[in-house]
Amino acid sequence: MENYSTSSYKLDVDLSFTPFPVEDLDVSVKSETLELIKNPSTWIKEIGSWLRFIQVNESLKCPEIVRNASQLSLGLELTNDQKILDLNHVWLGQSKSTDVLSFPIIDETFFGVNNEFIELGDIVISIPTAIRQAKDNNVDLCRELRWLVTHGLLHLLGWDHSDEESLNKMLLIQEQLLDIRGIL
Image (cartoon, rainbow, N blue to C red; front, side):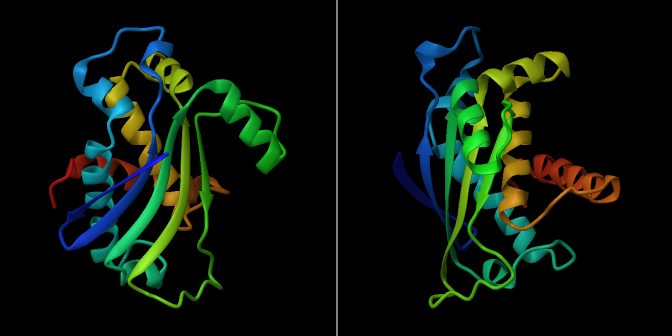
């Protein structure tokens, strides 16, 4: 993983990014999608915009320590079905592949010494699963990848979907995040 950072609306996002090996793609993808799969710069801008949107909207669930932070760090790994299956088994005890996993670091008892720089955790996405889901849902792979990252990001911020109502709220926020497309 390599670390990248940039400033977004006075919010500095440090991203530890592991790209998906382009040679492992079994489908052809548009250049915009290819950039998402191998280059962190778009993710830094998008994630920064999403985080800033959440920070300034008091009605959205966000740990106070994150809401007040000026520097946030997280990891994003784009991988294959086998690796995500292995992670799901080891960390969550589930012997099945999935589309996205989140490994949040912050919980309600978290009190950081430095409130300005906060580590959120890691998001792992299976590219082959995202490709299948995009096809099944008749959506562009770029949209599917962004959808999965917004889902993982909300989990890092403490969102959950243990019932239909909380799932619907989470899905609605994901749509809102995708709608801003990096512009507040």
